[in-house]
Each structure stands twice: as structure tokens, then as C-alpha cells.
Amino acid sequence: MGREDRGGTRVADVLIVAVALGFVVGFGEVLGLGWRYFVRDVLTHVSPHTAWMAPLGYAALFAVLSPIGIALRASFGLAPMVFICVALGLIGWIALLPWGLHPAAAIVLALGAAVQLARLSNRQSPRLTRYARTVASALGLLVAILAAIVFWIYGSTERAAYAGRGQATAEAPNIILLVLDTVRARSLGLHGGPEWVSPNIDALATSSVVFDNAIATSPWTLPSHASMFTGRWPHELSVGWSSPLDSAEPTLAEFLASRGYATAGFVANLSYTSRPFGLSRGFARYEDFPVTVGQTVLSTSLGRVLTTMDGLRAVLDNHELLNRKTARRINADFLDWLDGRPDGPFFAFLNYFDAHEPYEPPGPLRERVAPGYVRDNMGHRHNLLRGINARRLLKAEMPEGDIPLELALYEATINALDAEIGVLMGDLAVRGLLDNSVLILTSDHGEHMGEHGIFEHGQTLYEAAVHVPLIVRPPTGIDGGRRVPRPVSIRDIPATLIELTGGNSAAFPGASLAPTWSGDARVRQGAVVSPAVSELARGNVEQPWYPIAAGLEMQSMQSGSLYYICNPDAAEELYDLEVDPAESNNLAGTPDGDRAILAFREVIAEVGAPPRWCPPPAEEAPRRPERGR
Image 1 (cartoon, rainbow, N blue to C red):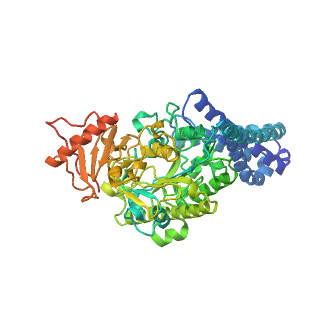
Image 2: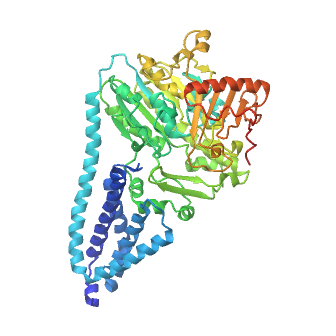
Image 3: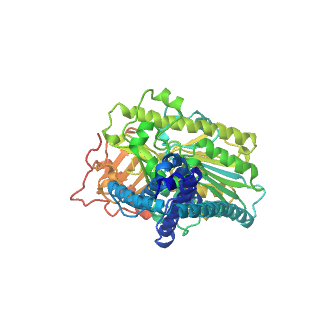
């Protein structure tokens, strides 16, 4: 093609071609995701908004890059713009492939195809420009239509749910369930943690029931939430590291909706509480993935590739998640819904993610608790199954002096969350809702901060991973508060809520916790509740010495001050947490310890998921070796 033809390429032509190619690449990805989900039946961790966000995201990105093509158009025509868009688009498409491809091979493949199409574009420049205008207009209209359809489906589903709910009794109280994702009990002031961490939660405790030994059913999000919603043990449910909660068991939201409650969920853990993982069942409104610029970027595979590049993140000194929903956002969304909700009682579920890795408290707070601390070796990842996350890698190898700083950042995120909990309590009080609401504050699991040489969660059943806060505030509260020392399971939350709202707690498995604080001391101590059992199935093992690395599953239980663990390799552990909170003196193998272990084995067997290897063969009686740094 002659220079005069290339020089005749207009600015508008380059921009239109960039936008059109962006729409094409984006819709290509949407089709690929649809094929994986609807045809191959592969769980895909994406928002329905991806149907319009992915094309819009690519079109916006390519438009931002169009000045490069515009600057080169006089000498090379449309070829530079086509090359850039095709190369980047193919890299994004290759990232979607279900099998691994070496990054270098992916780049070579993408660049080779881009070069060929760029050459072709200049030979067909006038025709390409005409087609680009048509494609940009048609696909741009399709983006708008798809966005309208997704919003309409959400809205119409919510309206239909409200219309189909049952009739509530006039005296039915509201229910507010606050789940502080990844907040361990030991870091809160009311459980012996630093007083500065949780002043507002501690204040809430003074008018509530505090369970000193509440145990999560699992040390990670999905099975723990599923137990809170169904009253079932994790092994009774479909949930797993790659499988969602199915519809086999009724959920608390479904039950309450059938009895006239308006139900709504507002979640910030976009990895395991989002719609694809089944926890939204029964909620008329369920807000998970935000409609934001950051989420739009993450709706494109290219955006996910770029934003999870560790080197780029390190240069920018920014490790925050682009679609992180802060507690302030969760509260604002809840209050907006609250002010426009239908008449009658409501059940609201709020999941907060502020305390989860990558531990990013607000700037001033970060500098106050860990001045000058640089978190090196940060890793970012995304996959279509478990979403996006960031964390410090190889924590077991970091300097000893960094552990207190990691803990300080973690507890600072709890402090920032606590401040928003305080604001929420004030907003609810102003609206006059606290005196007609049952409020439960808890967590789905804890977090390790170097105890036993372990970090984060999902790898162990030591106390740090499963001991969670559990605060129950009945309507009008309890003067002076009340403490319940006996170990309890968060599995009993559904039955407790049903009883507190005037229903029959037998509607859900488990038992109501209300008798543990009502009546005289004999009633409280003798109340029948679920055993404080936790379960863990193997997922991605972080370190070879982490307990779950020895096999496929493990169980634990607390009774009184004794805490028992059956490990995957049949090694048993027993600790008296009252005198040994660090779990450093294993009582298994002592006469008293072995007698106590017999009782633990019987209870776990009754739960229905006895480990096949506990008790171990008498002649072997293996004992887990010392672990840690």
C-alpha cells in the first residue's frame, strides 16, 4: 500500500478500530466462559456482569492505548493499532485456556498472529474501517442491552422473591448476621487481645451474650458459612474447595423468606461467598461482585494477568485487591437497602473481608502500627475457580522480626473494621432497629500468625484457626452482658435464630444456644448443644509440615478446656487450653490424656464423620513430630 494511503488514515479511524477490536475480544472471552460453564459444567468464578463488563473493559483499554496507533498512523496506517489490540487480546484469550501454556510460548503465538493480521489490515484498510464502524456500533449497543438485562434480572428476581414470601407475625424481630471473615477470637479485646483492636465490638459485648469458646466447623470460608446457613456439618454438605453448596439442604434465608422475612446478603469475600458458590440461595437481594472500574478490569483475562503481575505490583507498591469491598461499602449498601426495603421483618447477612490477606489497613493506621515496614515477596494470583487474592509468600522463611509486624497489620485491619461496626451500630440505633432485632456477630474462621510455624488458615485445626468470636444480642439487649464459657459450635446459629424469632428450633439441625444463657445456672450448664467439632479436607497445601499435608482430612473438638485433634496421619493431640493456651504440651500418651481421648473419639464418631485412622493401631500409636520454625 502506498504512503499516501497510510497517511490518509484518520484519528477517528484508529479509535474506531481499537474500540471495535476491544468489543470483539471481550465478547470472545464471554463466549469462552459461557462454554466452560454451560457446556463443560465447570464452576466459573465470574460475575454475570462479566457479559457486558469484559467487552466494555477491553474497548476502554484499547481506546486508552489508541494514542500509540494515532501517533504512528501517518507512516504505518492501521497496522500498529491492530497489532497492539490483537496481540493483547490473544494473550488474554490464551490465559483462559484450561491447560497451561508457558508464558513465552503464549507471547510468541500472540505476537506472530498479530503481525500477520496487522499486515492484512493495511491491505484492507478502507474495508476494515467500514466494518469497524459497524461492529463498534452493533457491539456497543449489545453491551448496553446486556447490562440492562443483567440489572433487570437482578431487580425482577428480587421483586418476585418479595412477592412470594410468606406472612410474618406482627411481633417477629429482625435478624442481622455479621460475619467478620478471618477474624480470630484471640485478637479481640474481649478475648484477651490488645484493647485498641476492637473497642466497639467489646462495647457491643456489654449488652450481649458472649461465647468464650465458639468453634467454627471448618478453618476456611465456604464450609463454615454453609454450616451457619444450614445447621449441617461440612461432611454432610456438598461444599469443597472446588464444589459449591447445592440445593439438597434448606438454608436459613429460605426458611425465613417462607415466613415473611425480607432477605438480603451483602458480601465482600468474592472468592467463596459469591453467587457461584451457592450461599445466595434464599436471599431476595444478594450483592457480591461490585459494579466498579476495578471489577471491570478484573472481568477481562488480560486485566487479571496484568493486575496479578508481582513485579508490577511491587513497583507500584500497591497490593490491594482491585475489587475489594470495604466494611464501609458493605454498610452503605446494607443501609441503602434497609431504607427502601419492603414492610415487615428482615434478615440481613453482612460478610466483611477487611481482615483477610493482603492485610491492607488504611495508610495512617498502617504507619502507626508498623512504621516503615515493607512487605516483600508478595504474590498475586487469580483463577476462574477461586477468584483473586494477594498474600505474602513463604511466610515461614521471613525474618522472625517480621512476624509481630504481620500481626500488627492484621490486627490493624480488624481495628479499621471495628470502627465501621461502631458506625453501623450507631446507624441502627438512630433508625430505632436495635431494640427489635436479633444481632449475631461472629467469624467464619481464625488466622494463624506463626503459631506452630503456621500462617493464614485452611491448613490446620489448631485453636487459632477455629476459635472465633460469637456475640448474640437479643432484642433490647442484656444488661451488663453475659459470658458463656462452655464450648459451642457455630453450627447452632440457625436453630438459635429460629428460637429467638419465636419459631421451632427443631426446624434446623443442631440445637438452640438460647438455653445456655437463659434461666438459672443449672439450666445454662446442662443445656444440650452441638459438640464443638471442626473438620478439614485437604486443599492446596502451603508447607509440607502443615498438618493437612499428611493426608486428606482431619477433625478436632473442644470440651471444657481440653482440645483434641485427630490428624491425617493418625497422630493424636490433646491440650489443656486453660494451662497451655500455646498448645505446646501434648497430653496424648499420658494416662489421663488417653482416657480423655476415648471420650472425644466417641463424640466425633456420633457426629458421623469419624476419621478412619483414629484411634491408631495400638502397636504403632504414632505421634506427630514437633513442627514449626
